[in-house]
Amino acid sequence: MRPELGRTAVILAGGLTQQSATELIHSGLIDLAAFGRPYISNPDLVARFRRGVPLTTSDPETFFGGGAVGYVDHPTAAEAPTNA
Image (cartoon, rainbow, N blue to C red; front, top):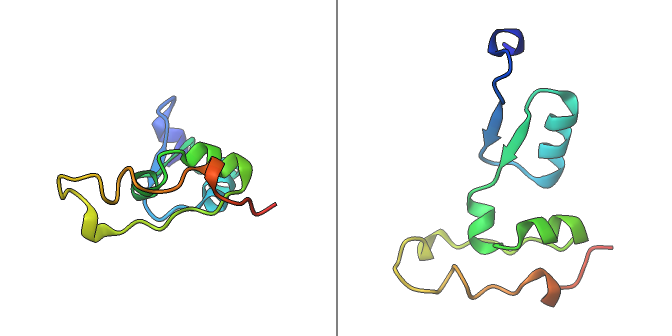
């Protein structure tokens, strides 16, 4: 499939972890990884990946409820212990 795409970037989203996304990028199967749900409960997702901070689990019951719960009430990477 890659040859037919030419210069088109391949982006994969859904069910990825930092490790699986990195492996797919390094293998050349994808160019970019997208993270949707992890960003909802981890708006500092990139900082968490860089520091090895565990991800906060999202609660789909709070999605699109119109309030702050589930969106801006999670601890930041600076407040969480690292895996290092």
